[in-house]
Amino acid sequence: MNTQRKDGRKYDELRPIKITRRVSKYAIGSALIEMGETKVLCCVTVEDKVPSFLKGTGNGWLTAEYGMLPASTPERNLRTNNQSGRSQEIKRIIGRVLRSAVNLKNLGERTIVVDCDVLQADGGTRTASINGAFCALIDGLVLMKKRNLLMLPILRDCIGAVSVGIVNGNIYLDLNYSEDSIAEVDFNVIMNSKGEFAEIQGAAEGMFFTHKELDELIEISKKGINQIIHLEREILKNELQILSGY
Image (cartoon, rainbow, N blue to C red; front, top):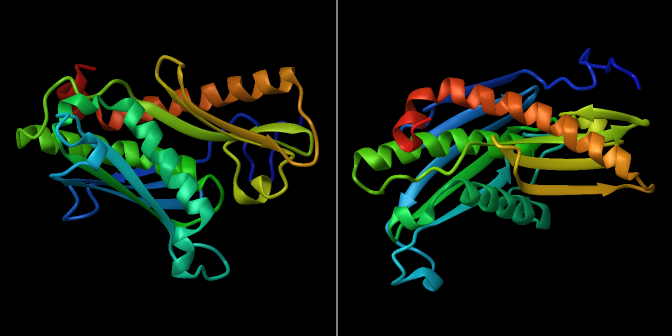
């Protein structure tokens, strides 16, 4: 196994992560997340309504939107591509995994909307979106608590997301675009702080992979997610205490 990658990272090393909170004046929670050269703006808003299947139940809902801005890649993206099959898939993933972290019964009949807009893409946009969206969501929930718009406990656990893959026979953590574009196997893994899974997506491209390689992919992703959750807990320490007694 090669331990050094083209960008200088070790095989099990995350890209540098920077999270800037409260970057939007009008969102109840927002975060700009940078994972390497990938940058995603995540904003949270709340609506006093729920989908029709939840009306009268007293339960809340959380949904997400995802899109890539025109200049987020070397070739301009058409704005209509934001409704592509890929974007639809990713927004559903973001919504699903965030719902796993929140006690929707304590929201009342309200809908939290999380918008994730990719400003710059260099691989791992969906996992970066999930991590940034979680941080924005925490700030949004705290503001809702201050406004008496929810009941506690509201937060089940922290979540983190990361990509892993096999590139030229080597297992790597947190793939950038140059690695992801040629990966023989590509996984996206989302877990909580207990090591429980919210979602695993994975597939091979023109090859098969072994059970041993699958175990190694999961283990290396767990290492990266633990680091991401540790960072989340550091920067959101006070907010997590308010919401769930961390």
